[in-house]
Amino acid sequence: MIDPIEHPSVRGKLSAKYLEMIRELDTIHFMLRDQAIELRDAFFADAKREGKILYRTVQVKVNKQESVSIIWKRVSFVDLPGGKKKQRTTAIPKGKGHSYREDAVVKKADYWLQQLFHTYEPKFAIIRESLVSNMKARKTLLELQRRVNANPPIE
Image (cartoon, rainbow, N blue to C red; front, side, top):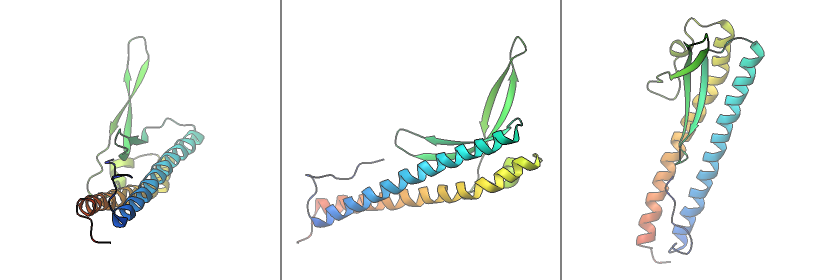
């Protein structure tokens, strides 16, 4: 994430107000990230209770810039020498919008996995949408703070 203009570089009350709002959006961003991680962990716990091989999974990815991605993945197993198997995951394309289509993720899947998808995907979609909206608002406020800070109005 791009850092806002901090004290002592803040010039004027308006720039300081933008800083407060940007910090609040950052707090919301981290709360959304933590909720996504908690939901992912709950998904794994529910899947584990079924006691079956999980062939769809969800990943919450956080990069160095704190950008969060919530991705459904297809799990497959590759045979290795010696009769061993290695688990491999491939991302399932989401398409447009904030939610995955049911047929892209759990088409022809066991009923228990379809139920898990219907339980968790609407929540993940809301978090995805909230993260995007939050970052758009943050970007707008950063722009405004930089403009106001460069040319502070008369106070």
